Figure 1 (cartoon, helix red, strand yellow):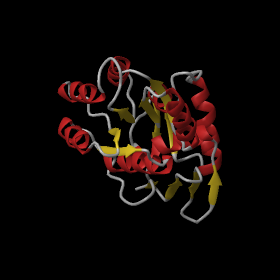
Figure 2 (cartoon, one colour):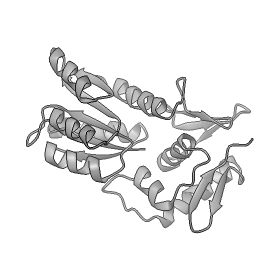
Figure 3 (cartoon, helix red, strand yellow):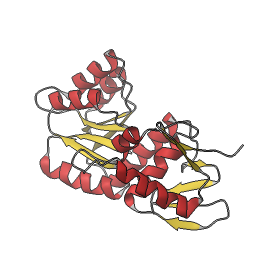
Figure 4 (cartoon, helix red, strand yellow):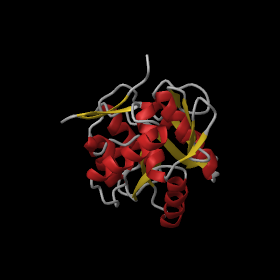
Length: 221
């Protein structure tokens, strides 16, 4: 899953990118509101972590502009601990959640995962489809037989996107947009390699190739 982190504190954003990457996300960083608004409109992020005190254009204005144009990207705003009025204005503007500074990155990751599951009607603490359950903390998958299979970072992000979009045709381009961050080498052909690795671990029948279209994660009927 791919995130946009809009934060002007360079030291904080650097630490958060490392932590969020270890938490199973591809992360792009911007340090001002103008770039944040543009990228949030142009790139199909799964969620945005949005600091309200951005230079150039406030996070609140960015959020309002997104919502006025029908951009429904999931947003978690970051506010000062005592700035209750910012929280109120944030919810009025259309935020999905907020987190007060200072915060623990574990809580941020948990809130992001909860928002994504909620957006895809996934109840409970883990994404679970077709007998497969993802463990976000260990970045592994548990089969219906109870077997735990370790995954690499990209395998985890790719499988999570498949599980959140079952029975949907997903093109290589779409998968690439949600698995890699802006700085990564986005060779869509590499997606085939990771899909083949997932097939080797989970079985060949779960991920179907659609010639000229992409791939479908099949849920057994």
